[in-house]
Length: 226
Ligand code: ADE
Image (cartoon, rainbow, N blue to C red; front, side, top):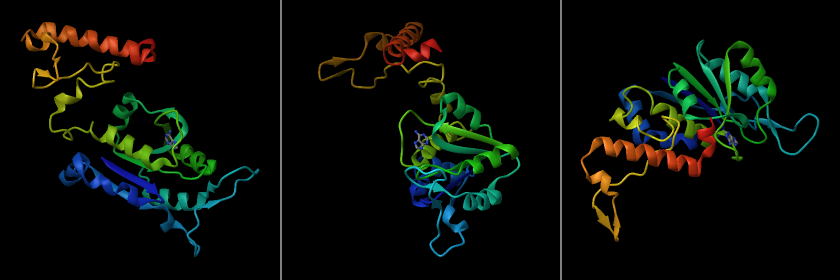
């Protein structure tokens, strides 16, 4: 998979050299490129923002640097992902969908956002997804992109050392994951639930399912309603 990130803060993404994403890049599973939006500016101050038409607080990202940068990056089959608090909510199902793509381009806006015509222009020519990682406001799309990239790339075949671990996680079956334990069997007077020491695989599976349901009912009833 190829992932391009456009940002005015390329340094945010230096951490993508470490951990499993770094390994995937070394293995050639992931071709990840970070682009500085300011490289496409033509003025001395490398200006990427201006005041909003119609008035209002804050600044808006100018369309020209975005157009020049995205024209140079977007392949025919690319999906342009624009992180924004006004987008559709990012869920595991969208991560699974995007993990199938050949190229994802993340357009990280700052300030009040990107001139709407950039979205409209590329939506008329290809696939654009406006995506929110949750109902809160970040200072820009960088952290949101990082979260999405981590959720998506770990689903690329060959990415995880042990792909079995993907099967039983929270959200894979629409429920939250059951509680997990390791040795010792007693820690600070707290015991591991005896069923997990029983060796009875059927009983363990039933207990885990019940725990998943109970947790989901308690913490995320909205998931059960879905
Ligand atoms: N940019 C600012 N806030 C955001 C959010 N919640 N999700 C995605 N992008 C954002």
